[in-house]
Structure formats: structure tokens, C-alpha cells
Length: 190
Figure 1 (tube, rainbow, N blue to C red):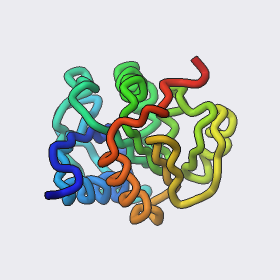
Figure 2: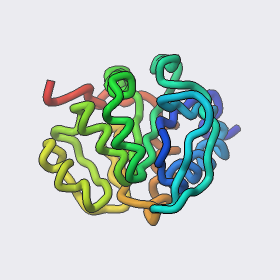
Figure 3: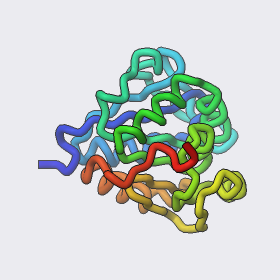
């Protein structure tokens, strides 16, 4: 039996996601038996990037309008320069993320992905990391930031960049396997 059999994970992304930060965790989750939906702002395909160059695209499973957080056991937000910026401006995405925290689901974000968590107002008091350029943003939003390859705080998993993917993937499998975290907070700021 695989570790994540009977678990369903939502990967929330849109055009401009960092290719490795979506596909590498996706492969790790599927290898452990998880069912995974790619949730985006629109149906069809979304375009990945390798830094600034076009990378692989992926088919969207559901658009955010038809996604219900109650159908999932965990949420993952890949980075990229454009992906988190577009996601954080969508009210339905922010509501979905807040709903995941309210349900105490494990949530993972890598690179620039934690910017979505800042907008969702759930980082205050949390131990986190992220891409070097957004670490000041996390601190300004009240997070306790450390520059480590992976930081776990009661079901919240964050990493800095594609070099951290091996450690990030191990931790997301572990945290998604554990399931709901009673310490997961909707928002300390609320």
C-alpha cells in the first residue's frame, strides 16, 4: 500500500508556474498513490516556465470556480514569478486557501508560492521560508522566517527554490500522510 492512497491533493497553479515546482511534487505525490487535481483560474492548459523560458504545460483538472476545498486532503502551491502573483489576486483562490486552513489541512508552498499565503492573511506567527526575494515580505507579514531548505510548522510546509525539491517532496508526502493538523491556524491575525 502506498502512503497517500485514498488522499486527494489540490495543486493550485496558473500560467507562469515554475515547471519543476509543479511537476516534481506532482510526481512524488502520484508515486505515493495520491489523486491530484490541478486547479486553476481557467479550464484548459496552463503554461509552465523554466525560470524565464517557456517550459511544459499541464492540463487543468478543475477551474477554481468548481473546486470545493472539502474534496481535498491537502493543498500545494508551486512558485514561479507570475503564478503566485496571478493567484493572489483571485478572490476564489484566497477563499480556497483560507478554507484549507479552517479545515486544518496540510498546505505546502515553494519559492514565490508563499505570497499567496500572505494575501490569505495566514502567515502571522508561522515558521516559514520562501524564495530569498520574498523573505522580507514574509517577515513584514509577521512570519518567523528562516533560510532553510524546508520549514514545517504544524502542517504548513514551505521551501525556497527548485534546489530544495528533494527535501520539500519528502516533507509534503509526510505531512499529507499525517492528514489534518489541529495546530493549523486559519489566521493568527484574525
